[in-house]
Length: 276
Image 1 (cartoon, rainbow, N blue to C red):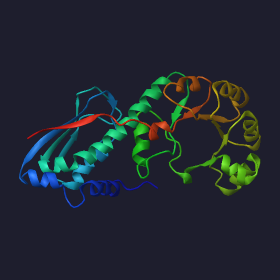
Image 2 (tube, rainbow, N blue to C red):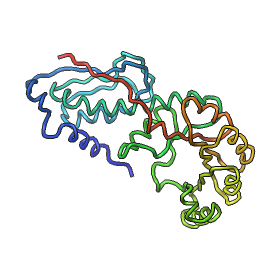
Image 3 (tube, one colour):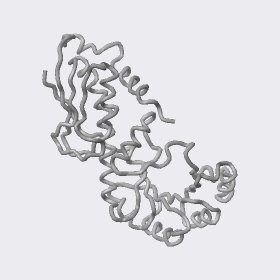
């Protein structure tokens, strides 16, 4: 279930504004109108234009916001990305909330683009995870797509992923897979997390559709590919960074999943400047 965008944005505005923007209400006349532009101080991939624009619309429907590039576009430093016109009070009051969203989402898209570029030509595809900011998952997974990555399951209802604790409680990989087969529709693919080559063999024998190779070394990944290629889809995860992702992808795995895309991406340095 994706949280409805307007609901989340209204809560974000309320969190920041509270009973009112004391500074702006005191200093800026109500009738004053103006313009502002938003640009980055560094190269980045654009994402988050929808929540950025919608924040101003929710606060004051008369505000005019134009995004000059599509999400997913690579933007150079000091190039205007948004143009905003309306009541200066609106622009100032919404500035931080709107920038918080777009800076964070651009950061995710930018890191994702760097990683997808790093594995270009390997045939491996980059996936995100569920390690997202609470209530931001829809935005953050969209940012991954804007950066050229692919989405793993959105939530727990979207697929079977049997992890170490499931296996421990079920008693074995074989039993966990058996229960999963019996408990879900036949259209579900079953993925099993494995921590060594012996478990990989168990998962293949049990009939797993996908294996998640958790924290395997590059040499272990190469051996896993030798064992499982053509028999099961393979996803590598754990220890994935911009520095390590290409070596992992070159082992021949089908996917590499990276939680850092959403939990560790640095926000992009964007600024809003006014002309009134």
